[in-house]
Image 1 (cartoon, rainbow, N blue to C red):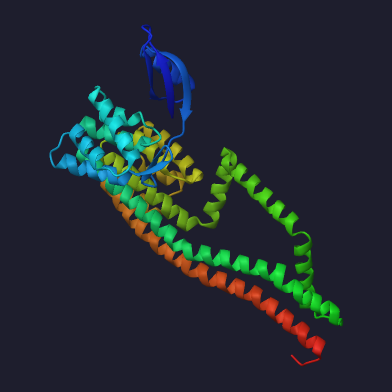
Image 2 (cartoon, rainbow, N blue to C red; image 1 turned 180 degrees about the vertical axis):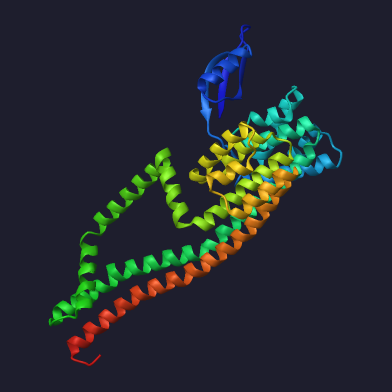
Amino acid sequence: MFFSYRTTTLDGTIHEGTVEADDKNAATEKLKDSGFIPLSLKAQKERTIEGGKFSFGSKKIDLITFTTELAALLNAGLPLDRGLHVIADISESGATRQVVQAILKSIREGSSFSDALQKHPRVFPKLYINMVRAGESGGFLQNVLERLGEFMESSKELRDHVTSAMIYPAILLVTGIVSIILLFTFVLPRFAGIFTELGGSLPLPTQILLAVTGALRSSFWLLLVVITAGVIALRKYIRSDAGRYRWDRLKLKLLGDLLVKLETARFCRTLGTLITSGVPLLQSMKNARDVMNNRVMAAAIDTVMKNAKEGKGIAQPLAEVRVFPALALSMIKVGEETGQLNTMLIKVAVIYEKSLREAVKRFVGFLEPAMILFMGLVIGFIVISMLMAIFSITDLPL
């Protein structure tokens, strides 16, 4: 994790910046070993690369655009500082200009590009910095930036596909719930008053419906408070480590096929991209694990990393934890045996991204008619109950 610090030296010079360490004590020792006297140290939250955007202050900056533009400028033969200067000049975003100018200043003061990026942990995630550092050390920074751009584009495309596929079911669900609430709280109470004035015995479905309506009207605000409190308590519980783990395990049981394909594609693409960029295997696996959202599957990667440290590779340990599909495991094993692990990981990611799109399409195709059928049954029950009551009061045959 990253810590922002404020330090001084024996001659009284004040320094500010960020340092990466496992905990606060390790960060303090790291600063002392560098000859600094820590004055303040504060942990910073890391941002993920998933969305393709990072925040600087209150604004959003397109990290994909920054990466692809810089890669294009470097491939055109411009030196790094000149490329950054061009991006700062052509950028329409003031936030982007501030970030790039700060990076450019650090480079001109003698910092490497990766060290300059590391001073902005809220802007550039650890995965991004590690890939840039590997590209710098290997002398192929522009290639790494191109892979980063492709990686972020693929991640964004996959996320956007899933999000867009779920928009219509979400709208349908909200509309249906609002319609049912309006029927129970405004429409049906009016019929209840009419039936009370007319008197007579009402059919059982109508009695049930009116009882539910009365209960909702009399305890609506109490029910709303209870639901709100329950949602807040559930969110708080999910944010805890134990709660998040149990919640992810439940999601894995309910949406197993979708989540497994999503996390498999995400893990394999990240790991393959990092290895191709020259990042060491264990560091690559750690970064790929951090990209995964499901804690159950991410915890299994910890076991794989432990076995990898002992020289057992990753194919067999991945098979032992039993969280990845059989096809992915077979392809990873072949890639490891042939020395083409990075290439095979990317192929696995492509296969499961395509499979995930098809799975999402099938899931939405089942979800939409299921929701329409459910709301149709609810509204149909309400209509039939009202008609039965009207016919019973007027003595008309149904």
